[in-house]
Image (cartoon, rainbow, N blue to C red; front, side, top):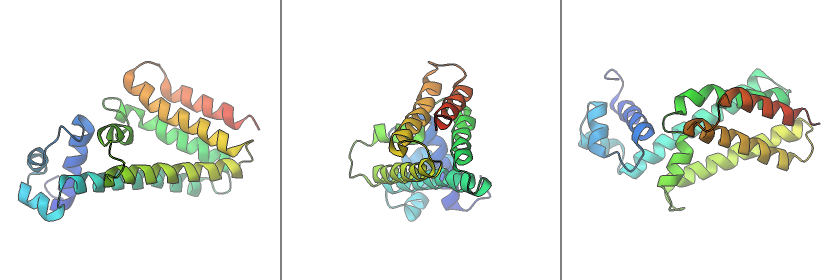
Length: 186
């Protein structure tokens, strides 16, 4: 991490700490120590901790949107395969989130103020994600694309929570089988 520029080190340290401990429990001093920098350096790049949290979530949202881009690029004109690719992206990522869970869900729980800029990033991301999935469901010719989008979204979100709390075994394979069953309903 020390070879990265300061801003990237700060963001990497913030991500690691926010994921492990949550936003509220992590102070700027802890981020500075993990990034091997000073609080003053953090405040040169981010005016407030809220600004740092917001930027971290913007980066995470961009990573998730990139998964949509990859699914579309890897399976052009094949929306069913695109949807399965997204489900595989979530299923494959489950081990990484098993300790603390989905960073968006966790952050929403810690940011109850709907006007908070970081919460707005999450809400915009989730709306865009839903719109893109709806487009895929419609292009796949699935019956009632809005209902199908809701079902798939519930499964993707629920799989992350179920994996985190350990209530269901074999979450990834089960998620993929359920998504396939929805896609086969045509």
